[in-house]
Length: 380
Ligand code: COS
Image 1 (tube, protein in one colour):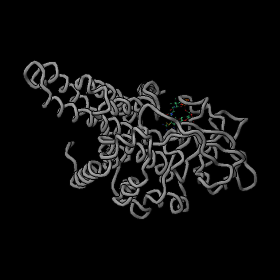
Image 2 (tube, rainbow, N blue to C red):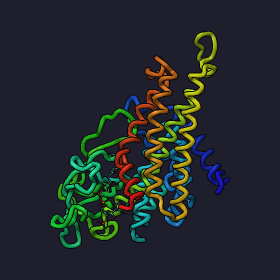
Image 3 (tube, rainbow, N blue to C red):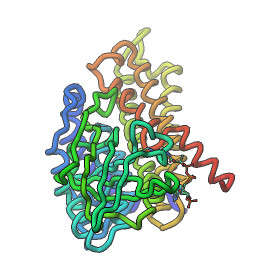
Image 4 (cartoon, rainbow, N blue to C red):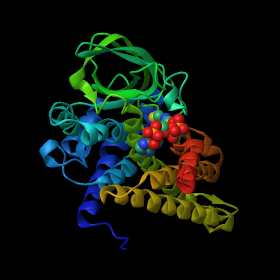
């Protein structure tokens, strides 16, 4: 066992930290306020190779691993959680299933441009009537010759509207159980595909979240991902890794809030001395730092397991559960340390607190993570 990052991981960490500081942080508050997605940031991430971190070079990636990927999401989220989730959904939710289940042709046609960052990816599972009960989806895909005709709508799609390719799950056999679901790669230009309502959100406001619709949307069978009926398993396996990306986002948000709180506590004086010299504040900071470190270790461990080809579903549910709760607690404490100033937009901690909340909800609520963990424990 060793707890040291390799030279390659340290190099990626430094590169993303510098990039985040210089290119992402300066506009983070403004983009949050105006709910604006900035495509130039994704383009710059592509130039640095961040859009294809874990994929081999022969499919357009940089040949690194899942640990490097979560480090990148963490460092981006430390200054801007919206940018963190843009990369996380693109990598874990869209590129991963193509890398894992795609044919050689699908990898060449879709994974390569995603990995190289010429295209953006998204994942479409949730519907208005099926959130936690993902198997209850109603979107259908009916076979017609060599095509499938998709009808229905998906909601809360991260990268909605900005994505070029969507991994879409639809019921292919309505007579069978709702599990009889199939996955498809849908291009945004496909007739019958459209982007619906854009959500106005509490946090991650510069990451677009939209509805997407399918009206007699014809998808050729060469764009079916995996086998017919294999979609629910693909959806679940994709989320196993995606959850660790969200854990990394939560670690980054919490670290960003702690950094701000430490700096503030060193400067701010009350009762004639810096507040950091007061035990109530110093101990709060100690608890925050300890919870963040534990979250980081869980997250890096799950990424390491995935890189080694070992089971990681339970561990990534644990990392998201613990890191998400930590992010919420730490950011709330950071606002408390800033006092009244923390409640204003003059400081970044209120943004961190708003951004943290979603890490307890998306890619499976904390309740779903407990379900996944307990089922693994009880072998159910
Ligand atoms: N990997 C591989 N296969 C999996 C799996 C996983 N992680 N999880 C479930 N499966 C398989 C099961 O093995 C089962 O296969 P069989 O039908 O061959 O036995 C099938 O999928 C159905 O599994 P299960 O019975 O556990 O399904 P449930 O309806 O009970 O749902 C939960 C399981 C609740 C865990 C699932 O619906 C879930 O994760 N919900 C949350 C969805 C979510 O995270 N949404 C956010 C979307 S992104 S913002």
